Image 1 (cartoon, helix red, strand yellow):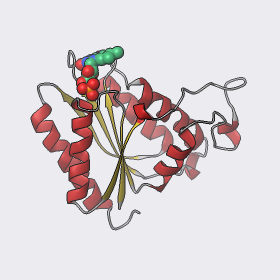
Image 2 (spheres, protein in one colour):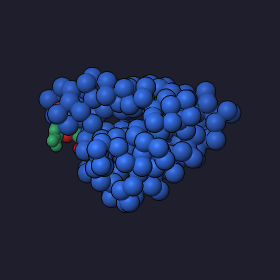
Image 3 (tube, protein in one colour):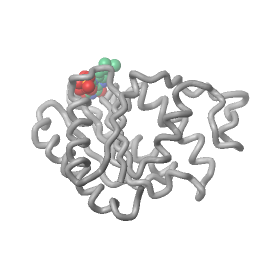
Image 4 (cartoon, helix red, strand yellow):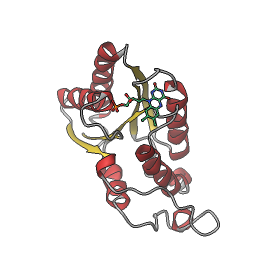
Length: 187
Ligand SMILES: Cc1cc2nc3c(=O)[nH]c(=O)nc-3n(C[C@H](O)[C@H](O)[C@H](O)COP(=O)(O)O)c2cc1C
């Protein structure tokens, strides 16, 4: 099984990166091949809400804004499982996580039962390093994204500065379990 881990913080050595690394360790321990991508290192612009709100995403299920999104979209479709780790910004996903998930949702949710994310095992992690507030609202929007796209939520994990140590263990275990559970049936 190949697991794609997306992390969405500009900090390469912060809490978000540590969570992504924990997920990678767990997935590797279970025998998966892992690719880690930092969304802030990619050029993924925000959705332009083309024309009167819908562009080619509605009928053709592809985004007409050409940047790194297309390659990431393809890579996500090829992954057997997906982990998205975002820092909590204002109780929401970071801008880089939001830009990617918004555009992905438009392309795949519009396929309805034909969404290519349907049943794809998905772990969401919300890392709140400031006040520690906003983890739940952030995870709620990630869960809603999964409902719209059909991605199969394996787990939703909040982590803050105080829970860091035991939550890193939980993230490692969640990724391990996801690979164990889906490893024989997915790519
Ligand atoms: C614009 C902005 C908004 C933030 N909003 C919150 C918040 O609502 N709750 C919180 O606990 N931390 C908040 N933080 C702090 C980040 O969640 C914290 O820095 C997080 O650990 C980021 O992970 P990093 O270590 O990978 O940067 C915010 C940070 C920024 C830059």
